[in-house]
Image (cartoon, rainbow, N blue to C red; front, side):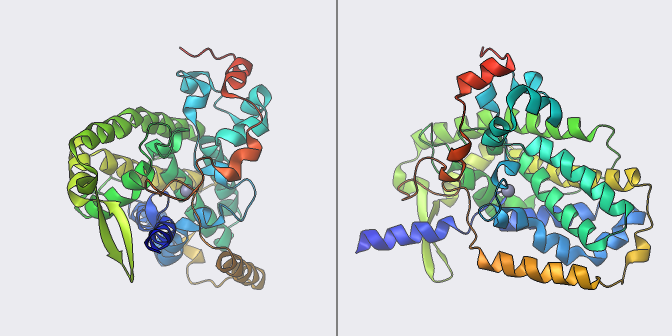
Length: 355
Ligand SMILES: [Zn+2]
């Protein structure tokens, strides 16, 4: 009986943690608005609740929409140590070299950010309010994900290094405990000359931080006994197993500002992208859209979307947020269908030799 009870708790707890966590994603999108220039800030502030609340839509869609999951990450290690230099940075060339199936198998976040950028620019050009809002919120989500170190590796939840649970630990638990102290002043948004390369730079930066993310947790785990490493907390009327405050603090200290840096980078990059889309769209007068209501068609679309979201229960990539002892399978069942080539085959195709 006790075992079943604990299992249930773990299942439940696994459904409340996401990419940057629900609250993290919302906060990042919200903060980006405040760095926009006067021509843009009015429109975005007017719709601040939409941009904030819908920051998590891409995660809600993850299991409902085919092809959604790979938009949130890229498993750089699959392509070898020099992946950043050797992988084609533009989608068309990447597809030619590696096939779309392979790219989808290991994640497409940097390319998808650029695709969203084109769409948002188009929506701004056409002054389509709902499309601008939806794409801005979505783009914010993908950019924030691209800045998370564990979104750049196949070992995304420490499942290969006996560190299961580290995903939710880094991006949700630490954020929940410490982000109130962070300094989110990132300065005004700037024009990005090459958005596709900018997306890759984010991935490169996040991936470079990965070593410390995994190593520091491992080092500290040797110093903390199981009962000191984890504790139980009350969430509403359920008890969930969490990383203890003491362990979280020790890890956060060791990372010396890393989570804050990645969160700040996300905020800045999102605002820079929105601003860039607006400039490339020919600087349309968005102020004039303030107060305008949605068209019949847009309202219908909104209603349909809402129903669709409500219908689908919210899930994460199975073991992203799950702690040891979890009942979830070790392999990501949702993506298995994409695994058509082995990593070695991929590297051969791409002309990449692992060094
Ligand atoms: Zn995500």
